[in-house]
Length: 185
Image 1 (cartoon, rainbow, N blue to C red):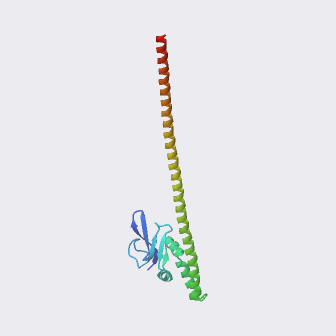
Image 2 (image 1 turned 60 degrees about the vertical axis):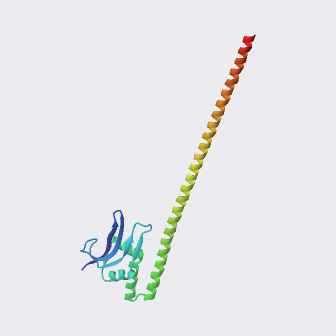
Image 3 (image 1 turned 90 degrees about the vertical axis):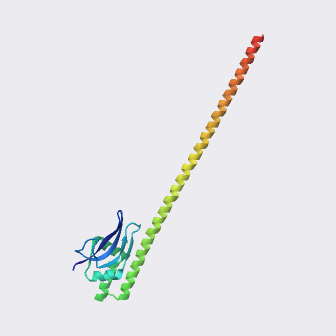
């Protein structure tokens, strides 16, 4: 029976969630499987992958062939490296302790890279949020300044109208006084 390590889709439309399974290659994509090896969630950044390394390596030793996407996931989590190192142990090229040490060192480096990406994403998100806040503050300050300027313009226009009205009143009074003086003379 040809066995494949492949992804089985779950989740809802637009939000996929996958199980990594060992299944008969003739079964349907989301159909019967032999063993669930882990999960893969591409909706998070970075993608969340949980994988049982021991059972995955066991299936690889039994001849299961991973699909291209499953191979990338197995490589990302170190299953293919562990499979390779166990082949070296079986041939006698290195001891089990050396193989475990190499795998642990690789996993630590990989965890450091993933943590660096997560921290980089969080700092980028915080920077974008701070930049948006600064832009919003600037827009608000401009809006307040424009409102104060408009209010000052209205007050200045009103005072000019009052001055013009007073000037007209004094001119009218002066002309009225001149008219009365002319009529009296």
